[in-house]
Length: 520
Image (tube, rainbow, N blue to C red):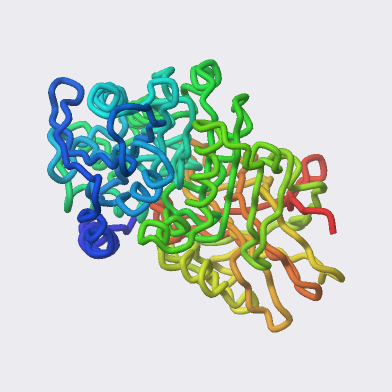
């Protein structure tokens, strides 16, 4: 499998999490000096001490009540994370309470990964705020980035007092995020593990989950799935709908920790007032500038959402198209009435013929590097690239469309269907969709991994795989290419030595990749 855990944790994860933590502390510490901020200890579930801060509106004297916003911290970040945004919200008339989730920094306990103690903590924090601040019990909201987003959604499903949620770069399905296609997203897991090691105290259960993930312990697979399901807002979508909190979800197309697919699927199941925003970027990068007080679309819409559903402000956000997407190529926002409407048509690229590739060698087609690649795409529109004509066909299967006479606006989720005959009982493939220019240089549009176990060697079976959702414009004169290989640094692969994969397209079950397209 060839992916060592220790180098990833100490290098990629350590550097990323340390940089985020340092940047947040340095950039936001001055806000702690502002008037109206109190640092407090709150007794969470089981008496665990949670370090928190409270920001109240200027001049608040207890003669009136203010809507309350609770902000649980992100994974690995300290309680000063949101102080700039908290001050802005307090200035506009909110009591804002930020708390460091259990297991991280100075808060007590161990990291439970949004387990039952974390959900109970959120309710305890609300209890404390209602008892010790001029907060209005009828107007309670929650918001947060990443870990704070997931906890906010779970709390809203379990506590009817929460009337509005803004979940930024969070998750709906934890297992579908780091184990989609039955494949371990090893770089994403290493970032989470490394940050937890640097800034917190992992529970024995979490340590076991990480170890089983890295080691591909199939005997513990169901245990891991059950663990993740208990911590997934999607599990409690009926409770969330019943409780009625208005839910705003915001994420990034290139999120290598929580891919956009799982948010989109969750959004479709919500029946409460809802909004879905997806932009270029990686995990939590779209929100980052707002944490430093700079103009930021995500935080602007978060405040508009909370203003409408907690204060009753008629700012028009409820009348806008609820699905707001920003293309990775063109910029600007596109509004849609629902997720299904973003792709008016689908165009299939036939995967004709029979193609055999050898496993265990990286062909050069890759999904990039966690954080770095999607940030480059966000800032400079520079996604991972590969020379499609030069990809070695011994290790990569390649199919291409004809040249398009007009621009193709890819919106949503591309779907692969093919027939696979492996020579071994287990294995992994990674599918990539590329935008190929006249010189054969391919820019990555999307990708996704797929792993199987227990198959009979030499016996064909059908593969259906959803690639990660995206919004990308293919220029006129370009092609789309589907590439399949077996090794990608983002994922743990399960290809035995000497394995070969044959892709075919039977007449009664032709192979294809279905491309979702917006109307011209």
